[in-house]
Image (cartoon, rainbow, N blue to C red; front, side, top):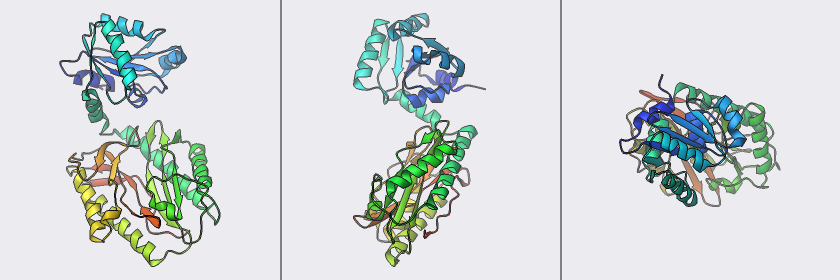
Amino acid sequence: MQTRTSMLSSLLPEEADGALIISGENRRYFTDFVSSAGYLLVTKNAAFLLVDFRYGEAARKQARDCEVAEFKKLGDTLGDLIRQYNLKTIMLEGSAFTLNQASETEKLLQKAGTQAIKTDALDKLIGRMRIVKTSDEIEKMRRAQRITEDALSDTLRLIKEGVTEKELALELEFRMRRNGAEGVSFDLIVLTGKKTSMPHGVPSDEKVRAGDFILFDIGATVDGYHSDMTRTYVFGEADSKQKRIYDTVLQAQLHALAAVKSGVTCGEVDAAAREYIAQAGFGDLFGHSTGHGVGLAIHEAPVVSQKSDTVLSNGMVITVEPGIYLPDTFGVRIEDMVVVTSDGCINLATLPKTLTSL
């Protein structure tokens, strides 16, 4: 079976003799090795993970589909490999390099007689590889989703008047990690009352009060792969306005989920949710995209937005998360993570979505 590094080797354009990858996500994607620093050099014949002394022993034991080259001076080791494989041009992972890193790396390559290709071509190539998930990747996200849902179900039992957003966020993270999560997918979003109108608000010492909406946008990681889910609950009884907004968001999400399948564009999925919300009179209050891809990154290709003409295909994993946000009043978002199939999608989320009173 072709490995990821050998696949990348075969996909390198004619004008490139190699590719240099520095982002942690992509180093992990190709080698399964986790480290805070390192370089992956992929040529048309081989792949080398360059790490310093801190990671040498672990990399030799854990990294796959590459040779491990432990360096004392990056320039020396990189230069030796460049000369050994006669690499005249090397593509850089454009989105991962800072300006300083790009400048320093280019100097190292020039010293070794190599020209850097500084475009987004390598990023696009890797993006095309990562956008469709394998069954193993999907299973990791499924496990992360189960951990997330179990943690939320346990935490909901702790909600009482006076508990703070921060306390709920901490309880969620503790339960995720205790149940096997490597970590959280992002800084967990737990908001109450008027703060739910802020799509990416930050948990604070704000306390839960009767009649409040409570919004949870949460996720866990398993072996580097993320889950992402949003649920909105009401503490006590919802009033007629809250019920109307909630039902509008739910129906919009169901319309979008029904539109998901291989061959449909991301823009069409977005339109299914956006048009429903607009027809209900709340179009101006839905200001973000309907979803995004999920994998080793919490936000990755494809983007499920109005302008996206990306065509969905089997194995892509996306979120579907419309919302309505009334400034300084309240907001509602409902989000599921789904796997695209030829005749629809497989929803990895299992928690109910009907408006629930806590």
